[in-house]
Image (cartoon, rainbow, N blue to C red; front, side, top):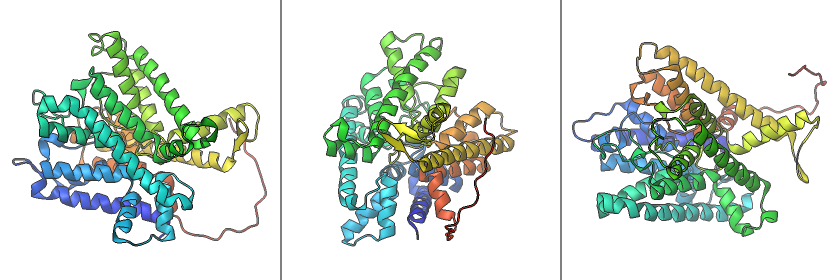
Length: 447
Protein backbone atom coordinates (compact mmCIF):
# COMPACT_ATOMS: atom_id res chain seq x y z
CA UNK A 1 0.00 0.00 0.00
CA UNK A 2 0.99 3.60 -0.49
CA UNK A 3 1.73 5.84 2.50
CA UNK A 4 -1.64 7.55 2.02
CA UNK A 5 -3.48 4.23 2.09
CA UNK A 6 -1.64 3.12 5.22
CA UNK A 7 -2.78 6.27 7.03
CA UNK A 8 -6.38 6.15 5.81
CA UNK A 9 -6.94 2.44 6.49
CA UNK A 10 -4.99 2.49 9.75
CA UNK A 11 -7.38 4.91 11.43
CA UNK A 12 -10.36 2.96 10.08
CA UNK A 13 -9.10 -0.30 11.60
CA UNK A 14 -8.54 1.37 14.97
CA UNK A 15 -12.07 2.83 14.92
CA UNK A 16 -13.61 -0.60 14.27
CA UNK A 17 -11.56 -2.28 17.01
CA UNK A 18 -12.57 0.45 19.46
CA UNK A 19 -16.24 0.03 18.56
CA UNK A 20 -16.06 -3.73 19.19
CA UNK A 21 -14.47 -3.16 22.61
CA UNK A 22 -17.05 -0.52 23.58
CA UNK A 23 -19.84 -2.86 22.52
CA UNK A 24 -18.78 -5.42 25.14
CA UNK A 25 -21.08 -5.63 28.20
CA UNK A 26 -18.11 -4.92 30.50
CA UNK A 27 -17.78 -1.45 28.93
CA UNK A 28 -21.28 -0.28 29.88
CA UNK A 29 -22.59 0.50 33.36
CA UNK A 30 -25.34 -1.65 34.81
CA UNK A 31 -28.76 -0.53 33.65
CA UNK A 32 -27.37 1.14 30.52
CA UNK A 33 -27.32 -0.25 26.96
CA UNK A 34 -25.04 0.55 24.04
CA UNK A 35 -26.07 0.20 20.41
CA UNK A 36 -23.42 -0.62 17.82
CA UNK A 37 -24.00 2.69 16.05
CA UNK A 38 -23.34 4.67 19.24
CA UNK A 39 -20.33 2.48 20.09
CA UNK A 40 -18.94 3.15 16.60
CA UNK A 41 -19.77 6.85 16.95
CA UNK A 42 -17.92 7.06 20.30
CA UNK A 43 -14.94 5.13 18.94
CA UNK A 44 -14.76 7.39 15.87
CA UNK A 45 -15.01 10.51 18.00
CA UNK A 46 -12.26 9.30 20.36
CA UNK A 47 -9.88 8.06 17.64
CA UNK A 48 -10.40 11.22 15.61
CA UNK A 49 -9.93 13.24 18.85
CA UNK A 50 -13.21 15.08 18.34
CA UNK A 51 -15.33 14.91 21.49
CA UNK A 52 -18.86 14.60 20.09
CA UNK A 53 -20.64 12.00 22.22
CA UNK A 54 -23.91 10.08 22.10
CA UNK A 55 -23.62 9.13 25.79
CA UNK A 56 -22.28 11.00 28.78
CA UNK A 57 -18.80 9.55 29.26
CA UNK A 58 -18.79 9.37 33.05
CA UNK A 59 -22.32 8.10 33.68
CA UNK A 60 -22.63 5.61 30.80
CA UNK A 61 -19.25 3.90 30.53
CA UNK A 62 -17.56 1.72 33.16
CA UNK A 63 -13.90 2.09 34.09
CA UNK A 64 -13.08 -0.40 31.32
CA UNK A 65 -15.05 1.63 28.76
CA UNK A 66 -13.46 4.87 29.90
CA UNK A 67 -9.97 3.37 29.62
CA UNK A 68 -10.76 2.12 26.09
CA UNK A 69 -11.84 5.66 25.17
CA UNK A 70 -8.71 7.12 26.77
CA UNK A 71 -6.48 4.72 24.82
CA UNK A 72 -8.27 5.64 21.59
CA UNK A 73 -7.77 9.33 22.38
CA UNK A 74 -4.07 8.83 23.05
CA UNK A 75 -3.64 6.74 19.93
CA UNK A 76 -5.53 9.26 17.82
CA UNK A 77 -3.61 12.17 19.33
CA UNK A 78 -0.16 10.64 18.88
CA UNK A 79 -1.14 9.45 15.44
CA UNK A 80 -1.73 5.93 14.21
CA UNK A 81 1.70 5.68 12.61
CA UNK A 82 3.46 6.71 15.83
CA UNK A 83 1.98 3.67 17.57
CA UNK A 84 2.90 1.46 14.61
CA UNK A 85 6.46 2.79 14.78
CA UNK A 86 6.57 2.04 18.51
CA UNK A 87 5.43 -1.55 17.87
CA UNK A 88 8.08 -2.01 15.17
CA UNK A 89 10.76 -0.78 17.57
CA UNK A 90 9.54 -3.06 20.37
CA UNK A 91 9.63 -6.19 18.20
CA UNK A 92 12.95 -5.10 16.72
CA UNK A 93 11.86 -4.82 13.11
CA UNK A 94 12.52 -2.04 10.65
CA UNK A 95 9.88 -0.10 8.79
CA UNK A 96 9.45 -0.10 5.04
CA UNK A 97 9.68 3.00 2.89
CA UNK A 98 5.89 3.42 2.65
CA UNK A 99 5.44 3.05 6.42
CA UNK A 100 8.26 5.49 7.12
CA UNK A 101 6.77 8.03 4.74
CA UNK A 102 3.32 7.59 6.33
CA UNK A 103 4.78 8.24 9.78
CA UNK A 104 6.49 11.42 8.61
CA UNK A 105 3.34 12.64 6.87
CA UNK A 106 1.24 12.10 10.00
CA UNK A 107 3.78 14.04 12.07
CA UNK A 108 4.27 16.85 9.55
CA UNK A 109 7.93 16.06 8.82
CA UNK A 110 9.52 15.90 5.36
CA UNK A 111 13.02 14.56 6.05
CA UNK A 112 13.35 10.77 6.23
CA UNK A 113 16.77 10.98 7.86
CA UNK A 114 15.13 12.55 10.91
CA UNK A 115 12.73 9.63 11.44
CA UNK A 116 14.18 8.15 14.65
CA UNK A 117 14.87 11.48 16.28
CA UNK A 118 11.38 12.73 15.43
CA UNK A 119 9.81 9.61 16.92
CA UNK A 120 11.70 10.05 20.20
CA UNK A 121 10.73 13.73 20.32
CA UNK A 122 7.03 12.95 19.78
CA UNK A 123 6.95 10.42 22.61
CA UNK A 124 9.03 12.66 24.89
CA UNK A 125 6.99 15.81 24.25
CA UNK A 126 3.69 13.95 24.74
CA UNK A 127 4.71 12.31 28.02
CA UNK A 128 6.29 15.49 29.40
CA UNK A 129 3.34 17.81 28.73
CA UNK A 130 0.69 15.29 29.76
CA UNK A 131 2.46 14.58 33.06
CA UNK A 132 2.88 18.30 33.72
CA UNK A 133 -0.79 18.93 32.94
CA UNK A 134 -1.88 16.03 35.15
CA UNK A 135 0.24 17.32 38.04
CA UNK A 136 -1.33 20.78 37.82
CA UNK A 137 -4.87 19.43 37.53
CA UNK A 138 -4.26 17.07 40.46
CA UNK A 139 -3.76 20.13 42.68
CA UNK A 140 -7.45 20.91 42.15
CA UNK A 141 -8.97 17.46 41.58
CA UNK A 142 -7.30 15.44 44.38
CA UNK A 143 -8.68 17.60 47.25
CA UNK A 144 -12.06 17.71 45.49
CA UNK A 145 -12.51 14.04 44.52
CA UNK A 146 -10.01 12.23 46.75
CA UNK A 147 -6.47 11.06 46.06
CA UNK A 148 -6.96 8.11 43.68
CA UNK A 149 -10.03 9.42 41.85
CA UNK A 150 -8.55 12.91 41.66
CA UNK A 151 -5.34 11.55 40.10
CA UNK A 152 -7.37 9.53 37.60
CA UNK A 153 -9.42 12.59 36.66
CA UNK A 154 -6.23 14.66 36.34
CA UNK A 155 -4.54 12.17 33.99
CA UNK A 156 -7.71 11.68 31.95
CA UNK A 157 -8.36 15.37 31.34
CA UNK A 158 -4.68 16.09 30.72
CA UNK A 159 -4.52 13.45 27.97
CA UNK A 160 -7.85 14.59 26.54
CA UNK A 161 -6.75 18.23 26.47
CA UNK A 162 -3.28 17.64 24.99
CA UNK A 163 -4.76 15.41 22.30
CA UNK A 164 -7.42 18.06 21.62
CA UNK A 165 -10.15 15.46 22.21
CA UNK A 166 -12.56 17.28 24.52
CA UNK A 167 -13.85 14.19 26.35
CA UNK A 168 -14.52 14.78 30.05
CA UNK A 169 -15.64 12.91 33.16
CA UNK A 170 -17.67 15.66 34.81
CA UNK A 171 -21.10 14.26 33.93
CA UNK A 172 -23.12 13.41 37.03
CA UNK A 173 -20.52 14.95 39.37
CA UNK A 174 -22.27 18.27 39.97
CA UNK A 175 -25.94 17.94 40.93
CA UNK A 176 -26.26 14.84 38.73
CA UNK A 177 -26.23 16.87 35.51
CA UNK A 178 -24.90 15.23 32.35
CA UNK A 179 -22.96 16.69 29.40
CA UNK A 180 -21.65 19.59 31.52
CA UNK A 181 -17.99 19.55 30.38
CA UNK A 182 -15.93 22.08 32.42
CA UNK A 183 -18.69 24.62 33.11
CA UNK A 184 -18.09 24.24 36.86
CA UNK A 185 -14.53 25.53 36.38
CA UNK A 186 -15.31 28.52 34.15
CA UNK A 187 -13.71 30.99 36.58
CA UNK A 188 -11.07 28.63 37.98
CA UNK A 189 -7.70 29.90 36.63
CA UNK A 190 -5.82 26.70 37.49
CA UNK A 191 -8.11 24.34 35.60
CA UNK A 192 -9.01 26.69 32.74
CA UNK A 193 -5.44 27.83 32.02
CA UNK A 194 -3.98 24.32 32.38
CA UNK A 195 -6.53 22.85 29.96
CA UNK A 196 -6.09 25.80 27.57
CA UNK A 197 -2.31 25.49 27.73
CA UNK A 198 -2.43 21.78 26.90
CA UNK A 199 -4.77 22.45 23.99
CA UNK A 200 -2.42 25.10 22.58
CA UNK A 201 0.67 22.92 23.00
CA UNK A 202 -0.99 19.94 21.34
CA UNK A 203 -2.43 22.11 18.59
CA UNK A 204 0.93 23.58 17.59
CA UNK A 205 2.24 20.23 16.38
CA UNK A 206 5.19 17.98 17.13
CA UNK A 207 7.35 19.32 14.31
CA UNK A 208 7.00 22.86 15.72
CA UNK A 209 8.22 21.82 19.16
CA UNK A 210 10.96 19.69 17.62
CA UNK A 211 12.14 22.67 15.57
CA UNK A 212 12.11 24.97 18.61
CA UNK A 213 14.13 22.41 20.57
CA UNK A 214 16.76 22.02 17.84
CA UNK A 215 17.09 25.76 17.22
CA UNK A 216 17.10 26.51 20.96
CA UNK A 217 14.65 29.37 20.48
CA UNK A 218 16.83 31.27 17.97
CA UNK A 219 14.28 32.93 15.69
CA UNK A 220 16.55 33.22 12.62
CA UNK A 221 17.23 29.48 12.54
CA UNK A 222 13.58 28.44 12.94
CA UNK A 223 11.82 27.03 9.89
CA UNK A 224 9.19 29.09 8.06
CA UNK A 225 6.44 26.63 9.04
CA UNK A 226 7.23 27.08 12.73
CA UNK A 227 7.27 30.87 12.45
CA UNK A 228 3.91 30.92 10.66
CA UNK A 229 2.35 28.45 13.11
CA UNK A 230 3.47 30.45 16.15
CA UNK A 231 2.58 33.86 14.72
CA UNK A 232 -0.85 32.76 13.49
CA UNK A 233 -1.65 31.00 16.77
CA UNK A 234 -0.84 34.08 18.85
CA UNK A 235 -2.71 36.39 16.46
CA UNK A 236 -5.83 34.24 16.40
CA UNK A 237 -5.86 33.82 20.19
CA UNK A 238 -5.49 37.54 20.90
CA UNK A 239 -7.94 38.62 18.20
CA UNK A 240 -10.55 36.01 19.16
CA UNK A 241 -10.31 36.78 22.88
CA UNK A 242 -10.97 40.46 22.25
CA UNK A 243 -13.89 39.65 19.96
CA UNK A 244 -15.48 37.28 22.47
CA UNK A 245 -15.17 39.98 25.15
CA UNK A 246 -16.96 42.36 22.81
CA UNK A 247 -19.62 40.00 21.48
CA UNK A 248 -20.57 38.39 24.81
CA UNK A 249 -20.58 41.51 26.97
CA UNK A 250 -24.38 41.23 27.35
CA UNK A 251 -24.47 37.44 27.72
CA UNK A 252 -26.46 36.50 30.88
CA UNK A 253 -23.70 34.08 31.93
CA UNK A 254 -21.14 36.92 31.87
CA UNK A 255 -23.04 39.43 33.99
CA UNK A 256 -21.91 38.09 37.36
CA UNK A 257 -18.24 37.73 36.32
CA UNK A 258 -15.54 40.22 37.24
CA UNK A 259 -13.36 41.75 34.52
CA UNK A 260 -10.61 39.19 35.11
CA UNK A 261 -13.10 36.32 34.98
CA UNK A 262 -14.57 37.64 31.73
CA UNK A 263 -11.09 37.73 30.19
CA UNK A 264 -10.42 34.16 31.40
CA UNK A 265 -13.68 32.81 29.97
CA UNK A 266 -13.19 34.70 26.69
CA UNK A 267 -9.64 33.36 26.37
CA UNK A 268 -10.88 29.80 26.93
CA UNK A 269 -13.59 30.36 24.32
CA UNK A 270 -10.87 31.49 21.89
CA UNK A 271 -8.72 28.41 22.59
CA UNK A 272 -11.15 25.50 22.66
CA UNK A 273 -12.68 25.78 19.15
CA UNK A 274 -9.17 25.06 17.76
CA UNK A 275 -9.95 22.14 18.23
CA UNK A 276 -10.61 20.67 21.66
CA UNK A 277 -14.31 20.51 22.47
CA UNK A 278 -14.18 21.48 26.14
CA UNK A 279 -16.52 24.27 27.11
CA UNK A 280 -16.93 26.44 30.20
CA UNK A 281 -20.05 28.22 28.90
CA UNK A 282 -23.29 27.06 27.31
CA UNK A 283 -22.87 27.68 23.58
CA UNK A 284 -26.64 27.62 23.16
CA UNK A 285 -26.78 30.99 24.97
CA UNK A 286 -24.02 32.56 22.90
CA UNK A 287 -24.72 35.60 20.72
CA UNK A 288 -25.03 35.22 16.95
CA UNK A 289 -21.68 36.98 16.47
CA UNK A 290 -20.01 34.70 19.01
CA UNK A 291 -21.62 31.67 17.37
CA UNK A 292 -20.30 32.61 13.92
CA UNK A 293 -16.82 33.37 15.29
CA UNK A 294 -16.75 29.94 16.95
CA UNK A 295 -17.73 28.26 13.66
CA UNK A 296 -14.93 30.11 11.85
CA UNK A 297 -12.35 29.08 14.45
CA UNK A 298 -13.52 25.46 14.27
CA UNK A 299 -13.06 25.48 10.51
CA UNK A 300 -9.55 26.99 10.68
CA UNK A 301 -8.34 24.59 13.38
CA UNK A 302 -4.77 24.15 14.59
CA UNK A 303 -1.36 23.51 13.06
CA UNK A 304 -0.38 20.79 10.58
CA UNK A 305 1.13 17.65 12.06
CA UNK A 306 -0.58 18.28 15.40
CA UNK A 307 -3.39 16.74 17.44
CA UNK A 308 -5.77 19.45 16.17
CA UNK A 309 -8.14 19.34 13.20
CA UNK A 310 -9.60 21.91 10.84
CA UNK A 311 -8.13 23.04 7.52
CA UNK A 312 -5.10 24.16 9.58
CA UNK A 313 -3.78 27.66 10.25
CA UNK A 314 -0.97 27.29 7.70
CA UNK A 315 -3.55 26.53 5.00
CA UNK A 316 -5.52 29.60 6.04
CA UNK A 317 -2.32 31.68 6.06
CA UNK A 318 -1.27 30.61 2.55
CA UNK A 319 -4.73 31.45 1.16
CA UNK A 320 -4.69 34.81 2.95
CA UNK A 321 -1.24 35.64 1.56
CA UNK A 322 -2.35 34.48 -1.89
CA UNK A 323 -5.28 36.91 -1.77
CA UNK A 324 -2.95 39.74 -0.79
CA UNK A 325 -0.58 38.85 -3.62
CA UNK A 326 -3.44 38.92 -6.15
CA UNK A 327 -4.67 42.28 -4.87
CA UNK A 328 -1.15 43.67 -5.18
CA UNK A 329 -0.81 42.35 -8.73
CA UNK A 330 1.99 39.86 -7.92
CA UNK A 331 2.38 36.38 -9.35
CA UNK A 332 4.05 34.83 -6.29
CA UNK A 333 3.47 34.82 -2.54
CA UNK A 334 6.45 36.62 -1.02
CA UNK A 335 7.36 36.28 2.66
CA UNK A 336 10.37 38.44 3.44
CA UNK A 337 13.30 37.11 1.44
CA UNK A 338 11.46 33.93 0.48
CA UNK A 339 8.52 33.05 -1.73
CA UNK A 340 5.98 30.26 -1.51
CA UNK A 341 5.52 28.00 -4.51
CA UNK A 342 2.20 28.39 -6.31
CA UNK A 343 1.60 24.64 -6.03
CA UNK A 344 1.22 25.12 -2.27
CA UNK A 345 -1.47 27.73 -2.84
CA UNK A 346 -3.36 25.35 -5.13
CA UNK A 347 -3.12 22.64 -2.51
CA UNK A 348 -4.36 24.99 0.22
CA UNK A 349 -7.30 26.15 -1.91
CA UNK A 350 -8.20 22.53 -2.69
CA UNK A 351 -8.30 21.62 1.00
CA UNK A 352 -10.25 24.75 1.97
CA UNK A 353 -12.89 24.47 -0.76
CA UNK A 354 -13.24 20.68 -0.41
CA UNK A 355 -13.81 20.87 3.35
CA UNK A 356 -16.29 23.72 3.02
CA UNK A 357 -18.18 21.93 0.26
CA UNK A 358 -18.36 18.66 2.22
CA UNK A 359 -19.57 20.42 5.38
CA UNK A 360 -22.33 22.24 3.49
CA UNK A 361 -23.48 19.04 1.77
CA UNK A 362 -23.50 17.22 5.13
CA UNK A 363 -25.51 20.05 6.69
CA UNK A 364 -28.12 19.83 3.94
CA UNK A 365 -28.29 16.03 4.32
CA UNK A 366 -28.72 16.10 8.11
CA UNK A 367 -31.32 18.89 7.93
CA UNK A 368 -33.33 16.79 5.48
CA UNK A 369 -33.06 13.72 7.72
CA UNK A 370 -34.01 15.56 10.91
CA UNK A 371 -37.11 17.40 9.68
CA UNK A 372 -39.27 15.70 12.33
CA UNK A 373 -36.73 16.08 15.15
CA UNK A 374 -37.86 18.99 17.38
CA UNK A 375 -34.42 19.20 19.04
CA UNK A 376 -32.59 20.13 15.84
CA UNK A 377 -32.39 23.52 14.16
CA UNK A 378 -30.39 24.71 11.17
CA UNK A 379 -28.08 26.61 13.52
CA UNK A 380 -27.52 23.49 15.63
CA UNK A 381 -26.88 21.24 12.63
CA UNK A 382 -24.46 23.69 11.01
CA UNK A 383 -22.56 23.99 14.31
CA UNK A 384 -22.47 20.18 14.61
CA UNK A 385 -21.13 19.56 11.10
CA UNK A 386 -18.40 22.19 11.38
CA UNK A 387 -17.49 20.74 14.77
CA UNK A 388 -17.26 17.22 13.35
CA UNK A 389 -15.24 18.22 10.27
CA UNK A 390 -12.86 20.26 12.43
CA UNK A 391 -12.63 17.40 14.98
CA UNK A 392 -13.63 19.91 17.65
CA UNK A 393 -16.41 18.31 19.67
CA UNK A 394 -18.36 21.43 20.60
CA UNK A 395 -22.12 21.07 20.26
CA UNK A 396 -25.38 22.85 20.93
CA UNK A 397 -26.67 19.66 22.57
CA UNK A 398 -28.27 17.88 19.61
CA UNK A 399 -25.82 14.95 19.22
CA UNK A 400 -27.70 12.33 21.32
CA UNK A 401 -31.01 13.15 19.57
CA UNK A 402 -29.79 12.60 16.02
CA UNK A 403 -30.94 9.67 13.90
CA UNK A 404 -28.69 6.76 12.97
CA UNK A 405 -28.17 8.09 9.43
CA UNK A 406 -27.18 11.54 10.71
CA UNK A 407 -24.67 10.00 13.12
CA UNK A 408 -23.03 8.09 10.27
CA UNK A 409 -22.71 11.33 8.34
CA UNK A 410 -20.99 12.92 11.36
CA UNK A 411 -18.70 9.88 11.65
CA UNK A 412 -17.61 10.34 8.05
CA UNK A 413 -16.94 14.02 8.74
CA UNK A 414 -14.86 13.22 11.85
CA UNK A 415 -12.88 10.59 9.95
CA UNK A 416 -12.24 12.93 7.03
CA UNK A 417 -11.28 15.74 9.42
CA UNK A 418 -8.71 13.63 11.28
CA UNK A 419 -7.18 11.70 8.38
CA UNK A 420 -7.33 14.70 6.09
CA UNK A 421 -9.16 15.37 2.82
CA UNK A 422 -5.90 15.40 0.88
CA UNK A 423 -4.81 12.07 2.39
CA UNK A 424 -8.12 10.39 1.55
CA UNK A 425 -8.06 11.81 -1.97
CA UNK A 426 -4.52 10.57 -2.62
CA UNK A 427 -5.33 7.19 -1.02
CA UNK A 428 -8.24 6.44 -3.36
CA UNK A 429 -6.86 8.12 -6.50
CA UNK A 430 -5.63 5.89 -9.29
CA UNK A 431 -1.99 5.93 -10.24
CA UNK A 432 -1.72 7.26 -13.76
CA UNK A 433 1.30 8.07 -15.84
CA UNK A 434 1.17 11.75 -16.72
CA UNK A 435 2.36 12.89 -20.10
CA UNK A 436 5.16 15.42 -20.28
CA UNK A 437 3.39 17.33 -23.06
CA UNK A 438 1.50 20.31 -21.66
CA UNK A 439 -1.78 21.55 -23.09
CA UNK A 440 -2.21 25.11 -24.43
CA UNK A 441 -2.87 27.81 -21.84
CA UNK A 442 -6.20 29.64 -21.80
CA UNK A 443 -7.79 32.04 -19.32
CA UNK A 444 -11.02 32.78 -17.46
CA UNK A 445 -12.46 35.96 -16.03
CA UNK A 446 -12.28 35.78 -12.22
CA UNK A 447 -14.01 38.16 -9.78
